[in-house]
Image (cartoon, rainbow, N blue to C red):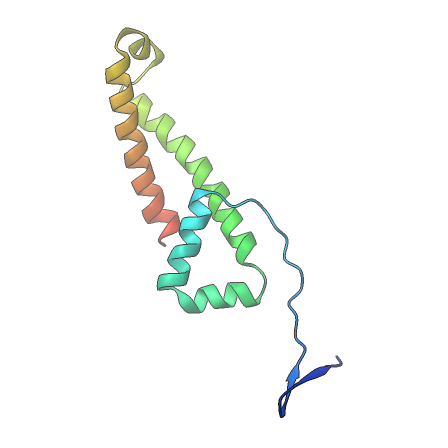
Length: 116
């Protein structure tokens, strides 16, 4: 391993670069996780960043959270009897119930995955 240096005033600064990190799309949950790590888990954030695994970590959180959200919403809707027939017969009630279900599922995901 050979290091090269550049001169900054009276100092020699090593020319260090990080390897290219694979870029994957990051959605809502990935951005929330990044913000949480930056504000509350600074050492973990720095470690992930310097090992070039931050984007991979955030993409995994995003994928897991999205899959879990779909699964939780479906399970909770089935348990509460929110069906397509309810949607046809009383659309406003269906919308209200589905909004409550999504909010509850969102809270679970935030506590289990994003803020863990």
